[in-house]
Image 1: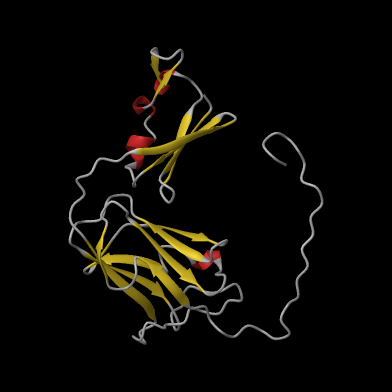
Image 2: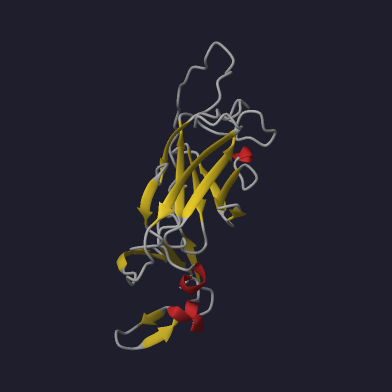
Length: 212
């Protein structure tokens, strides 16, 4: 059912299953940043890893996917985007400038390895043969440019505001940092209005305001 209450008409998809069991594990087909990249923006603390097939979401978490700065583990959030067959890593703060980060994904031979939907573990194809798929990248100089609001749009009782770069979530979701002008020239902080909230999507750099 859509937001306005309209029901979806009947929809059908036909497909054929393979005539044999899946015995081949998934492979990494691309990463962003790429392995060995330098000058990566400190203001974009997100990493994307693409695969050649779908993964089992229950095997994608902070036990099977890690980020390290030297030997120290970096606190991260890990998501699996099934539509893009992609693992998405988010760091809550900006990357450190001029610093090398290493991403590790548990692969063949590890009990906690990432698996495809058939339960076959990730192939270790980085050339290391250590039951880990790893890649690293190095950040550039410190960020000194102020962020910008790129555009905003309203959909029914929700407003979306997209920014030019990652923001600190606690400053975006703080209602006292947003004001409503009605009429124009008469400002009221959103914190003074009841029932409203702000959500932050770190992957699209978008704030969603609703309930006002």
